[in-house]
Image (cartoon, rainbow, N blue to C red; front, side, top):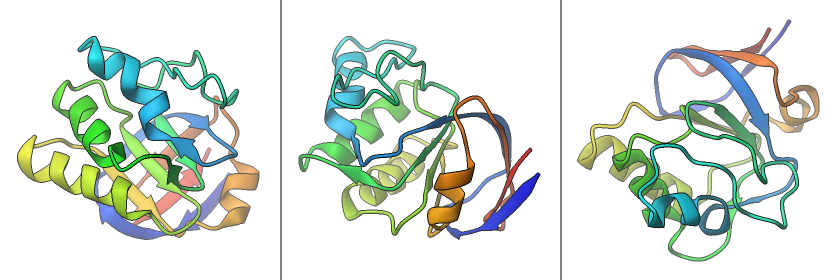
Amino acid sequence: MKSFKGRVIAGGNFKGEAVVSRQGLNTLATFQKSALTRSKEVIGSDQNNPDVFGKKLTGKVLCLPQTIGSTTGGLVIQTVCSLKANPAAFLFSEHIDSLAASGIVLAKVWENSDVIAIDLLGQEFLDTVKTGDTVEIKEDGTVTIL
């Protein structure tokens, strides 16, 4: 068991299974297929990211350095949140990027989403957490890998 403390962007308490991307997550490529088909479950569709490709992301704790890709990234996050198909949490080892932040904030405000986002968890967090680990998130930004 190891705990990390990050900066709360969108708070909440949650305990669930981690899906880890060791590289920047291309939001559009990862979520687009599910968003366009208005799916109730997001399956990672970015063939260039073997960490998430083909994995169920809905309801999971998505652990990543940050998101990358086009300026539609925030809108894609907001869209999957509006469909209630989003990951339960986005845990960033680095600073959250502006596109992910905008999508998460819009989802909280406009979609009344319960999505959680914490950044600045550090490289050690990303080096420690593995896909399939159980992760517990606290409202204060404490993240524990159980």
